[in-house]
Image (cartoon, rainbow, N blue to C red):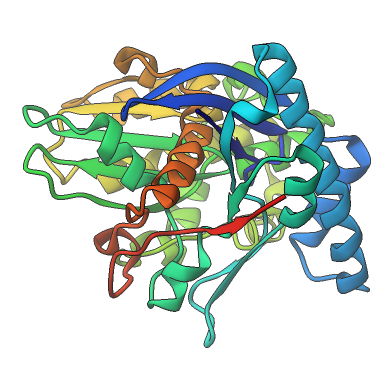
Length: 360
């Protein structure tokens, strides 16, 4: 039996899907990036910030998202030549529209009608992975360190897995089996926001816009003074916090736009390196969309001179599919009664089997 992992993250660049077999190690069989329709992407972006008539807009977006998810599953199965009946379950993250782990009553909300998705695909869906961890006092994020430990930890090496999506997170995997991890801050989110504003491009292809600019040290210092960066773990964040409104407090219009982009790139790299450099790690492996930004990768290498910095390709796992693989693993873990969170990462009071089953 196969599992499907689905991830649509804070970058909103599309739906990552993987078809995975377990033996019990995960093996990637097929992968697919399914784009969001433009109208749905705009609706999801709007829901990430407070606005008018939110409940009505959320309900409509949930239904459209379920249909989009189902279309992406069918496209993956067609590409792989695999029947729906061969799939044990779909592990679907859903689309985060609010992540408030530090609110007086903490919550994290991922949308997508999973009953509809299960019905349309005629495949069981495992979803709602974050809220049980929050119920036990955790942040509900990041969830990928448990998967990183299962797949990437090595008893002879001090490793760090860095996932750079819209938000960046790290999994510190020491050789002695202890694991820590947290969101370091913005990954690609601010870079994507700024290049969209300045050049009407959805992302900075290969860091080309970054490469046109010069680093602004004073602006970088101002940004790094944000309390999030010095906050102790466990901690997690989202585009609700790191967005254009956050950037606007620094009056970016005072500067050359390319210089701002270059500085945002260093902000991502610096906040990651600050989380890593005092941990005596030897190897840093990067996954997520940020791995394709050559300026960002060069910044990480220069800021971490005592580590080797490369992509998870070095470990035999395509960096574009690591997070989707993690949600296939979480669905497999749910069905095998294996905890999917790490209390030392999220701050939860106990380890938990994560997810809820939605049956067709």
